[in-house]
Image (cartoon, one colour):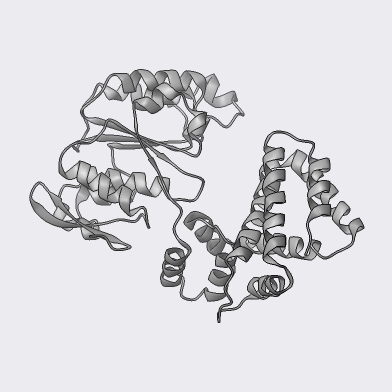
Length: 356
């Protein structure tokens, strides 16, 4: 039986309550708990999802569960191991990402590389060289590889060698957005879990509980459509990001009912930006996609904000058929840009064809 925050599990016959920092993902949490309580832990796990779903939080939660010294106290994270995991000072928890460097200050790879990657020297030092030793203070050494989409080819080969030599006291947790970015031979050695986005209802409950003083911001965030929990928290903690997204939504709503000249002008601005910051433009197009999806399921609410007022006005103007047509056009152009289509031509075609 699970709730939004806690889970009742049996640990070798003891009834305990484990407190998860991870929100949602109930099926995965139940499965991980079951594997732990029956002592059937895999040597390697992949958590896969888009950005902001909570992969890293889930991995740290699992590391805490595995090495908890007093499970009956895990509800408040009070054992020494849990406290160390929470504070990121546990000697048997290692987190590797694209910012990680090896201890060799003269290492050319770490000093000179400008690429965003997880380097082989880091994998060699923090995983391979330590794999032969037992943990310092816990049952398992847990290595979390965040942003594993950015492993270099050599790093992947080194990681694969470690995974092939199954180790009873080592668990490797790989976090990535896209499974196609990593070798199939690595995937075959791992138990893979795909995280699901929180439902809008659960996201609303969580945000209202955690940020009761930010009701207007929460209403705006929910109006964007398919927002992940990580994105939502980022927008509340960094208002400039929220304002930027609001600006993008207002811009496209205005573009739907403006002159051809203004549409082509905006298309040119976006195509220039696309060449400088491809990801930023793709994020904006994703916002447009979510806007039309939101219109398809829109239900007027008592809670209003600057964005919901605009969306409700658009909902009244636009037929469902036009919403569906616009959504298909946005998805088509999104796919074209992902396949390296000419950005100016693609965006011209999109903005000119969108209609109210």
